[in-house]
Structures are given as C-alpha cells and as structure tokens.
Amino acid sequence: MLALLTEIHEYFAEHGGNYSIFRSLYPRNAIYIIQNYVKAVPEDVQVRVYAVGGDGILYDCINGVAGLRNCEIAAMPFGNTNDFVLAFGNGHDDLFRSVKKQVEAETVPTDVIKLDGQYAINFIAAGIEAECVFYLENLRRWLEGNLRLPSFIYPLMFMLGALVALFRRDVRDQYYQVELDDGRIVSGRGLGLNIGNGPVHGGNKASQLIAMPNDGELNLIFLKNNGIIGGLIRADGYTRGAAYKGSPHYITTKLRTAHIWSNRHLIINMDGESYIAREAFVEILPNFVNVVAPDGLTYCKRMI
View 1 (tube, rainbow, N blue to C red):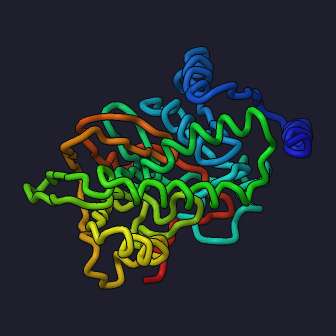
View 2: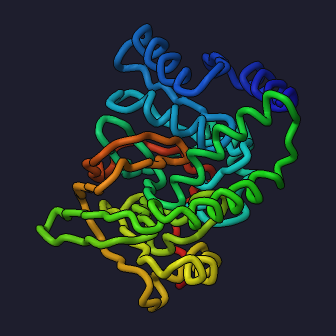
C-alpha cells in the first residue's frame, strides 16, 4: 500500500489537481467520510471516489455516493475478493490498480441494486451462500484479531461455511416466495437464491454468467432443494454457471423488481455484507452511478 500512496503523490505532483486520501476505520465508515467531504464541495465540481481495497470497501463507497449527482466511482482491486471488476473481463487488475489509468479514464453508466435503502453493485443472495458468509464473517473477524491469515484461507473458510449450512435442515428447507414485477411468482423450498447485477461474486464464482451491470435488468437464480448429497454434487457446477446451461436444478429469470418473503428470517448478503430481515424489496436502478473504465474497457458478457 505504501507503493500506491507514493504513486498517488507522484502523479498529482507531476500533473496537478486536487486530491485527498482517507482511511476507512470500520465497516460503513467510508459512507460518512464521502458524504461529509462532498457536502463541502460545490455542486458543479466533479468528485471521483477511488475505492481502494476489495468488494467490501467498494460496497461502502457505492452507498456513500448514492444520490450524489456530482460523484463518480473507481474500483482499485487490492482486497481479498475483487469480483466486480471482473464484469469488465479477466486479466485487467493492473489497469484498475494504475493511478494514471484510473485518473485519466472515462466512466461508463452502471446499474445498481437497491434493497430497502441499501445499495449493491454486484449481487444479493439469501440461503446457504448468505448463511455461511454471515457466520464465517464473525469467525474471520475473531481470527484476524488474533492471527494474520493468508489470502488462500478465505475460499477454504467459505467452503467450510457452505458445508455447515447445507447440513442445517432449517436452512436447506427454507421456503421462499419471490414476487416479480410482471406478477409472476417464484416460490418453493430451496437452498437459496441469488440476484445478480454482475457475472462474478463470492471470490471469482461465475454463477451469474449472463448478468451485465448496464442492461437495466437483474438475474434471479433459485436453487432447488436437492438434499445434502445433491447440494454437494452440484456446488461446483453452480459456481461455474450451471444454472444457465440447461440444468433442471435451478429456476432462472430476469427481473426489475422483486418482493422476497420467507417463512423464517432471511440472512441477506449484499456484495459480501450481511443483513437480517423477514422480507425484502429489491429493485434495479438503471445507470445509477458512473464507474471508471480504464483504457476504455466495457462490460463484457461471459461465455455460456
């Protein structure tokens, strides 16, 4: 990170321009930092917010710029999971980590998911995915408070959490009802659901192959309950886009709004952040935020 700070200082020393550097001290702290900063800036001055880290700080920055017309956002992937930038394709991390490329690039209009006053740019999940992240996040924070964890540990922790959640019958047999904007209802007992705005989530899991963050639509995957063995067998396929490859074990559809209800509390995961609710209202906000696209990159659809 010291090298990045040096690069920032050197770039602006050479090219000029105003900049400020802030450190987010805890989850959601960046929201208040951004909003307080922008209040002091004239409305006709464009502010570009650089989210340096992973999908967690990007989530906070998206919520920080929400509703601010003079704000743009740039994702600089230095975190444990950097899934959103993969919507531009693979192999572009160096472009997104370059201060020069990010400062000088144009932006692309990007859709955002809104859920009960919160905003996500990549995905929302409920069920086994969300349950395992919720409980493992508490474990991760405890471990990081006592140990320094290598990056390869995080995917292993996710798999362990998914396995634990799969063996819980109340999670495996949870009932969901999803009422869509056109009046259709997707319902039943299942392993969970995923609503995607981008194609990749959860640490390079490409389950939402057809999702595009600029098409004005969201993509729903409902995972049918195939039992413990079925869930174990199909876990890998799910992370590789099996839902869009003709598998009968999923229900898929596009949507613009959705009202989600369940017979028990919902643990909802939004871009890696967890919330608890009994029901939720989800909607797509087309072209809600302008995202920096270095070197003229565009969002690209994954191959099915």
